[in-house]
Image (cartoon, rainbow, N blue to C red; front, side, top):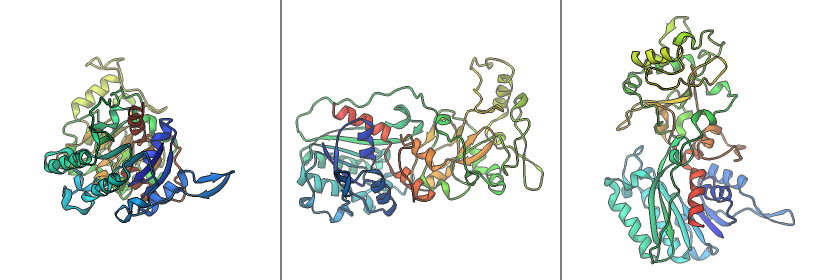
Length: 412
């Protein structure tokens, strides 16, 4: 099967096909971002003859400048067309945003090349009422050029990855005859946030004392945890690397990294975080958990089961502690809270509302952890790409675990 990837990024479709063990050949891709191109080229093998590289997979560049007649024939077209125009994290301009019109480039190319299959993707916001006319136009255009379309909003956390990433997928088949297509079935989440964390993390990912103090005294953060949601993390984007507002983990040493607190979780009491002035500071947990929650945690240290009949949290380090979670500041319609499933990885400032907690120290998610939350098992080559660009690539990409399962259903 021959494929052509539009808006390719790091080549999520190719990675997903390989993960699904489906044999394919990529005849070309379309991408304009410098770092995405570098990532694509160093991960997807060049064409070889007798062990010698003949050429890289050809990048056709800006899709608005592609003449469809110049493209090789292909069986599958894939594309996560730009979604900022429809995202809740953006301004919601829809087709008034020029990026919202790039879907027409997919139609323009598919109408000429007529691939047997297409898999397209966008944010869930495209299906919402403000963009409903655009959504219906997309469906009608696909039908006009000969495709039967099945669409559905799928969430990564319901298909094996601990990330709350909702995306609408369009499975398109070159036929006007309706037929039964089954989307991947939901499954129990067996991989948790703690399972994707690196064992050793560079100090640069941990908050400084100044940043920690700003977080602790944040009024917005206090409001976020008036009501705790321990199940699903909020949205995460690629801008988490920029400053103290990113996604962070709580660890069991003090913010300056000068050593482990001797009483990490003894008696159910949180350790004291000291400021650079040596004064006792309000531990971040206290900003999150109300007194009743603390009482239950205290009881859990003394009993096998809590008063609610719930087993105590399994320690995540030798010194004890709590299961790693994301804490999220409230923003817009999102009420924030304490969450066990990672927020949706994105590519903009929405990511800056999330913090990663691991025992009693706070840090950002590392780029490697972000890619693990996109379905990778460290097999992607990110050499020569800065952290900031790695975060952006992850946020703009496809969850290759979920997409591989869609492909398995499409090509049964």
